[in-house]
Length: 261
Image (tube, rainbow, N blue to C red; front, side):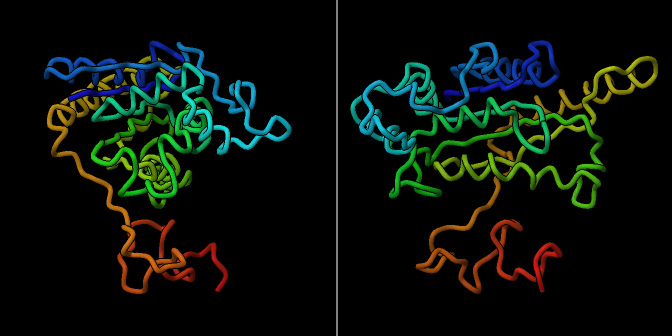
């Protein structure tokens, strides 16, 4: 198995980065070929723009999707994007490691998706969702948060962290990945001392053991269900009797208190 590990944490000695290195060791020990990429260490430029495109189809107006497709077709994409696309296409399993910042992923990782998920190469109008380019590949998010677990639950003050991760989960599924349930670790905080620091270290040690044990048995990892094409009408709305897997794709607006009645 070929494994690609993308880390988006600015501190090399962070707990999140440590989990990424442990994941690499687990898979290498099992005989997998592992490629590890640290976006901060590479100084990856996350802001998409016309400066990356040397053979513009329209020099007067920058259309990101048009230029991505064109530069893919003429094999003139930026070197860093080309390399990352090749890593994605050559891997069977993708692991994304990042901290939970402002209720989502760090900007560098979102920018990585903006630039690397190239229109025409990674997806197009005929290759999306369950028939996407990455069909048959799996992806896993490993995410650390400073807030305690109860604050990040379905009834927590900070909101349900699992649902707040829908954007990257959906983006990866959109290009074809089978999504594994994210591995979430709460209460990862700095600045502790004394008993509080000791208790946190014990907690983190247990999470490392659990994480490594689950990676060893990666084939048993739960998969996130998604609606398929047959669940939707021609106008792309959910059919009346199709299942619901998320509050983001649902039948009745009135079921959610934020919607008008």
